[in-house]
Image (cartoon, rainbow, N blue to C red; front, side, top):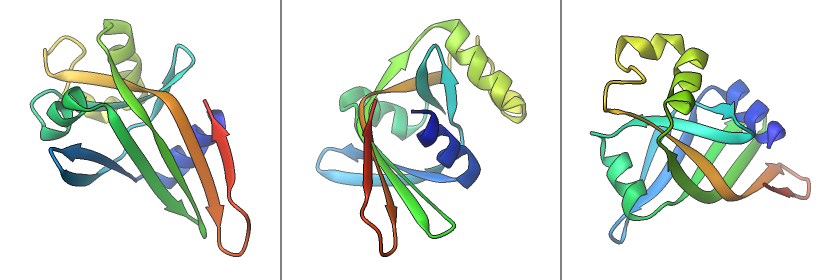
Length: 130
């Protein structure tokens, strides 16, 4: 999990894919945090991505950096604990311009049953689970 975190953090931008009915939805994200031994992302409850994850928690993350990429497939499960939201916002203090741990909008999700595939041009992929 730490290797996935390090890759996503250094890439700065990753793409999160969800589904809405039978339509895939992909958008850029930048928040990634480790809290309580799990890998977390953050969004707002008013956003479509939140509604999509609550309807179907299966998601995939993809990032590319320096000729390598990672795809992380798994379930994104909401953690409604204030401490989890606070940890994320402390890791990304610039988000405090838009979010607060107590605003009723901020939410964080952790990856569950995740499989990460690290790929490199000309090399065999490496797979890790967490």
